[in-house]
Amino acid sequence: MIAPVRVGQAVRLAEWAPGAPIELSEIPANSAKEFILPASETIGRYDRDGARFTMRETTPEGPRTVLLGVRPCEAAGLAIVDAVFNWDSRDEFYDARRAATTVVATACAQADADCFCTSVGGAPGATRGADVMLRLADGGRQFIVESLSARGEELLRSAHGVTEGEAAADPLADVPVRFSHERVTGWLAGQFDSPRWQEFSLACLGCAACAYLCPTCHCFDIQDESTRTAGVRYRNWDACGLGLFTQHTSGHNPRADQMARWRQRVMHKFSYYPEKFGMLACTGCGRCARMCPAGMAISDTCRAIDAEESSPG
Ligand code: SF4
Ligand code: SF4
Image 1: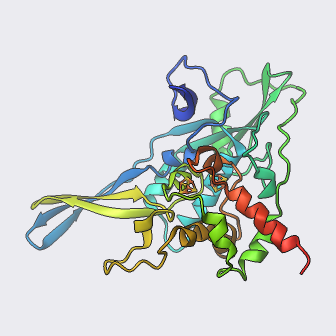
Image 2 (image 1 turned 45 degrees about the vertical axis):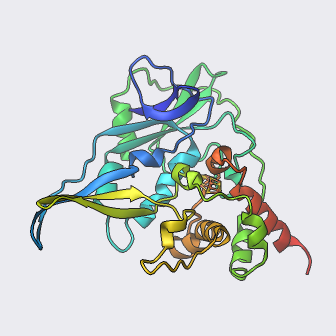
């Protein structure tokens, strides 16, 4: 079971040890995606004899997992990433973990200034991507439990202390709408070469913390490590904010500066992904802004775009 627990000074989603307090009042620093798409995983093994390579069967791992107490923006992130791993081909490694995972989301009673789920189609009580939804009730003394899928039903059948009854749900967090995502997507369609990108991206250091913590960022690289007789193929997280991400072997880099990389991040989430899959690739969790060492926030870029798109002329 993975749950929000205190690790040092931070609350993180991590393996729960029986007896450890589950911290629902703080937004975890990391994202649930790392339990479905690990930062590094083995996707192949092979034997090698000179120039002859023989692949060995590598079975995808799918340990039965419950993600407990994730926020609605986290659960929605998994539903978004599902699309890209099941599009032109099915990713058996991703799918094995996903199929073995039951998502128990908790409606948000607290939000912070970086949250903007309501600007991207979400809400503190949204159920997208969740198998079970928990809502605090009766002044925090109980949960209202709602099953949303067959996996959720199965989990609840084995749960103790769940009874039929009525309870008054506690108020949810108030998350103001900060921009219109329709206007942002509209502006992006014609502004690839806008001079505003320079200003939007100036503070970005290119560290990729935002992508690694984001519940919807999913870019990876594939690397081999081999000896003369055998090798292992790994899939490792990568990120469009990193300078080497698009660098060619020749040394040419089509995204030569941080402006081009920040533009790609915003375009991917608010233009390319919606065009391809019919959904935004941002859930408004605010994690990228909360953790950015340079104080960058994708919602600030979106608000500036919205203001520009809304302004007359
Ligand atoms: S936006 Fe912030 S976290 Fe993301 S790459 Fe730039 S400096 Fe790093
Ligand atoms: S881009 Fe930022 S706010 Fe949007 S889902 Fe990713 S981490 Fe959350």
